[in-house]
Image (cartoon, rainbow, N blue to C red):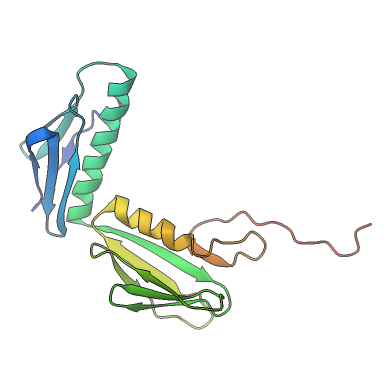
Length: 186
């Protein structure tokens, strides 16, 4: 049995899960509603506030899907009950971000500002910059896949470079740094 797949998903207060036609799992909670189509071979049942995912055989394909769909359902339940938050730090002289509704306005050292449109499911806010600290962008959403994709897209606007570490990085991320040129080496 899959270690992840055999674990039941317990539903917190205020979260409901329904399995509809074509094996579509819908999760509804205080922060929103999410749905995921599950493979026809995988069976999803909801009993007494617990979601269980079972597979028909021990084929490698069924084993991989078993853990995958259990993890996706667990992520949806967590998202609609507590939500997800990703923090990104802008490292560099003059780097800053401004949030204007659903539009993020970045100044990343280019000759122009970059405007980034957030989807309606993702909310962005810029933490107030403390003296001597780097600007931090906070993204919040109930959809883990979407917020991860948006954070990766924002990071790709200016990836951290290995010599000084300038760029957009996740808070707490350890960057591999390179030594620069060594003067006078013969």
